[in-house]
Length: 272
Image (cartoon, rainbow, N blue to C red; front, side, top):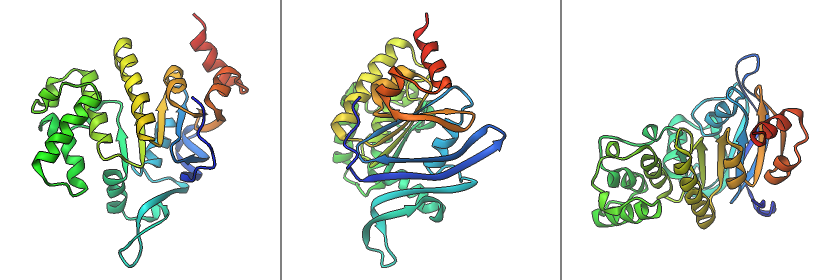
């Protein structure tokens, strides 16, 4: 994918972010800027530190050192009014960080069951996100649920069915609908096609690419699958043993990798 114009304003910045559990375990000294409307892919083998970095960026795990800065359009000033400005994620209280995840951000888990409430209906899963923004009209909540089920290629007639009655691929689609219904400013995706059959993956990726384009989403995508990265990401960061070893435009990195580790990753995908 071509990269959006980098004149677009920055949305999220990592500044010297480290979260280590031991030598080479976690992430270390990570710097990058995500621009509005951009999809940044973070790739690497298992244990490279990409999932740790995602947890830190999304406010789920505090870094040992460094700063995560988010430019919110609804940041609260001391007077309680809304202002556009930079938020230091870990200078905020836990309640404010959780509010960001509910109201401005979205998180798509690898296992959809981690992102769904299995005890309530499909429609209720979608509607809950809207209720967090203040929507209370039952008819509008139900209409939004049916609309988004259609958008993610689920049968709207199943709006009253429980998620546990859906297949794994259908649950992932429902989780995506639940996440995107509020049109979040920033979406974190952790291996969104992991564990699915190849045919199911292909359909899900086509759907995701369409939604990302139509909604103009800003996304941080963690994946070990370079085909997923090529299809969805404008830019890539390649991680190994907790550090970024190469970064740049997706096509540039995958077609002409410079670092030996990136070359190995790419060749392992291309070699029969």
